Image (cartoon, rainbow, N blue to C red; front, side, top):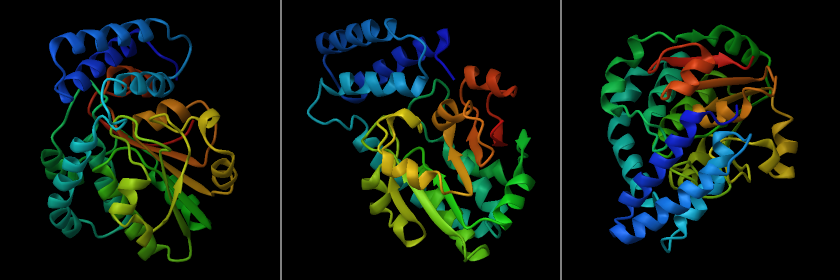
Length: 281
């Protein structure tokens, strides 16, 4: 999915949030925003995640740490872990774990609309998916040998682990993989956060190599793509992965996310705030 006009303003707003998060002084903030505006104005027919992979390193150049949301990512994980015990009590099946995983997708620093994690979990188990391909997913899983979850945001990955745990109990003979970004980008999960959570206890954690907040094939490592192509079923978490993968025509992929921007809402044909579990079209 290529950039729309709304995406350009979103990227500019993201830049402003980064400046505020870094507590930059006014003069430095103006320099950052000027650089961001110039960069954003030059983007052509590329996806929002590819644009972000160009923009965020430029924003990070104004600080000593390439991980501009490092502190907030740690806080997101802490908040998710506080909720985990109560969520675990409600998860009694793979279906319930899928709901928990999609609720975690509200943790996102790149979208114009924000949702409260605690409030999300108070209603998610009684909320239907606007697009619900769970039956197709479960049918494919029955004959699968390998399954991969492509991770999205830090904090959200706490509930991805819960889904992988449920998968391990229900389908113990399926090999489970969890794919992460190749470097810090926005608040997306990398090897650092996955290992800190001990994700390796429930899945083989793999570095996709991508610097993009979404699995862009052109930026993935050859080793990852060789592994990826052996998967029987793939869950792609979040809108960034959707934006990269909706056009690849691969029926192994199931998109799992909450609609958090009008551009994606229009693309999937559903309303802002809806839950999506959709087989790739």
